Length: 173
Image (cartoon, rainbow, N blue to C red; front, side, top):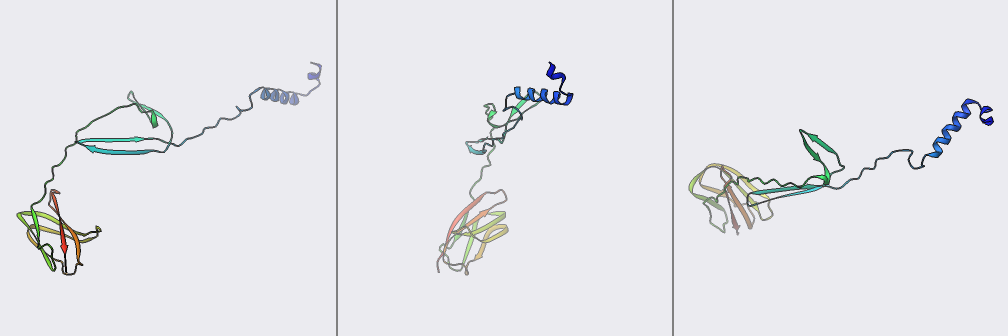
């Protein structure tokens, strides 16, 4: 006690702070937050009118509650499955012909019934578009192919309802 009387108040305060700090564990001076990143991925598929979609992985976990529903990100999600039937449009093949096949100078696309607002696409074997053409009322339509190289081509005809038919055409010169 005699020693404390001989020390001024600033030194005494400094000694008390040092004594307090030395009594604390050395690794608890600062708080650190380490973020971990979990890569995310997802996939989806459809089979027999059932669509299945899933994702996994988030950058960090948080929890949020809205109107009594709790949502946890990342791998914390509860396992739930929701099935919903999706109406599948029924597409039909168009009843069209392409002749002559093989061709040299021109081809004719004909239909047994008139196809209003049709669209014609011609691609080569590599998928390169050679021709895209809209035809208002397709019943019989001619295409000049005199400048096309010998090879295999695909002609796709669409109607206004996305019904389609793809035909293979051979150009032989």
